[in-house]
Amino acid sequence: MGQGMMTGFAPLLRRFRQRGRRWLALGLIAVVSAIALTACNPSRFTVATANVPRLVFSTLSDPKTFNPVLNSESPNVFLYTTEGLTTSNGLTGEVEPALAESWDISEDGQTIVFTLREGLRWSDGEPLTADDVLFTFNEVVFNEEIPTSSRDVMRIGEQGLLPEVTKLSDRQIQFVLPEPFAPFLRTMAMEILPAHALRRSLQERDADGNLRFLSTWTTSTPPEQVVSSGPYRIKQYLPGERVIFERNPYYWQKDDQGNPQPYIEELVWQIIESQDNELLQFRSGGLDLASVTPDSFSLLKREEDRGDFTIYNGGPSTSTLFLCFNLNKASRNGRPLVDPVKSRWFNSVAFRQAVSYAIDRETMINNIYKGLGVPQTSPISVQSPYYAAPEDGVITYPYNLTKAEELLAGDGFTKNASGQLVDADGNRVRFTLITNAGNKIREAVGAQIKSDLAKIGIQVDFQPIAFNTLVDKLSDSLDWEAHIIGFTGSIEPNSGANIWSLTGSLHAFNQQALPGQEPLEGWEAADWEQEISDLYIQGAQAIDEGERKAIYLRTQQLTQEYLPFTYLVNQYSMGAVRNKIQGVEYSALGGALWNLESLTIAQD
View 1 (cartoon, helix red, strand yellow):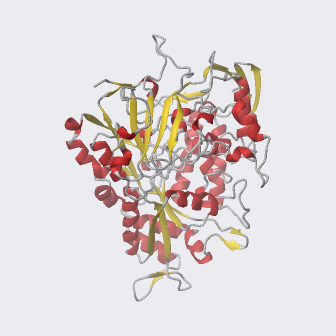
View 2: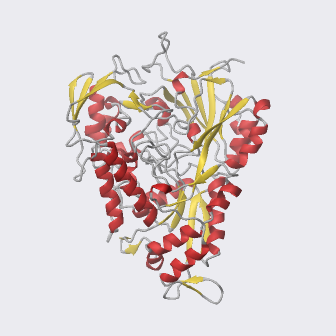
View 3: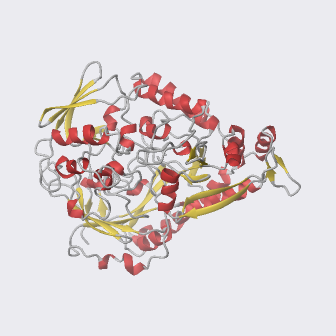
């Protein structure tokens, strides 16, 4: 999970802004019953006339929130509606100015002063000033009552201290760090929030005593009440159908001639909860962009000229895909989260390594990915200078049933007369594996894992489930045994701090209770788990690049040895884009829309 968020289906639909956190890469790939093609027909849009420059693309799930601080998934509406002090270039990954036009860093690296662009305004026309930056950090992100992954990646040092943020003037904000923090500038891509629209929600509580902020800007909020800073604002949301974005008339960016950007006036985000239907819509001309999956590549390649589009291949994507066992030994209200018998299996390193050896990744790549992918061996994106390849001493798990069975035998597992794997107490090894329904790749991967593990006597009950149900299991109820998902990636390893920190909001394999959730009893961390958490703190502290690389090499060696996530395949980042969309600079880092403000649509 590269960047600390559940990821969507491809970087194609990701406007590249380095959020400084990782999102659960659940691929936002759920399936609802077949969507009638007419329901997705752009001719039915209740928007402006046909001559309005409009970009139509899709997502595989309804948005879960309009509040950026509470978001934990990608793609999301905030890729188009919000902005931070900094951003990242989608080709180079370099940090660039966004709402801040510049910054000054003290010699000791602990005092950073940002200067906002002059004349910034929110999408409702109100001024955007240093007061909004202070509000965002001091009242929201640093507020322990608000569960947000943004706070995780800003914690500094062993004590997890946060910066001191003060206002110097209406346009200048000072951050004082308790110690040097190497990834600081990238974390400043965090969305800035409007104090005038949200402060009151922090001063009121609901009947349960929770801050009203936690239920503010839900997807049922009228779009005109959702104030944004990015190039677009939400115009309309029709659940199960589409989100329509309109150009933010107060957005700051202009071209060299002084013309306001973005040039494209509207974005239409069709909610098509099936990759098959997305493909049909793209081929019929209903979409301007589409993800290219391995099973659709050959078909689309033959249609490039006739369909007047181009398929871009950015190489290995920044996202991860993995199998994960629930290692949580805790209980809630006296009831274990995981059956203690199964928990003993899952928490055995030998068991997890055996499972990894038993998964035939090469067959997976050839049959499911049609050769359009490579084995994945690291949580850090291959584009990152901190990525460690197998030749750097990172353990890999080539397909080897003999090795798998040796590991299991050494751990007390045997096969009964029916060829079923049983543990030392005679318990049959059987568990439920879930993923988000509608993602054909993940469903196929799950089916192959079920088949592969059957060869060593393990029965896998594979169950693709609705996306929202999956999110609830992974982040709230913690009621699951094994799952297949992924995380988005980034150049900066610390964007995954909310995954690897013991208290991180995406510490998915051994999640602690988050604010507002029922507490857990008996939660504990393994020694290797603690070491990875500590190393991520050290990696953020280290300013010397050589030292940072050595630290993150060690983290990758640990993650591959102990396998909190069993990494599978790194699919190529591919997208199909209509040729009428001009200015596309596709990359695995940024996809097709990282420079959205500069894109134009040629008139027919």
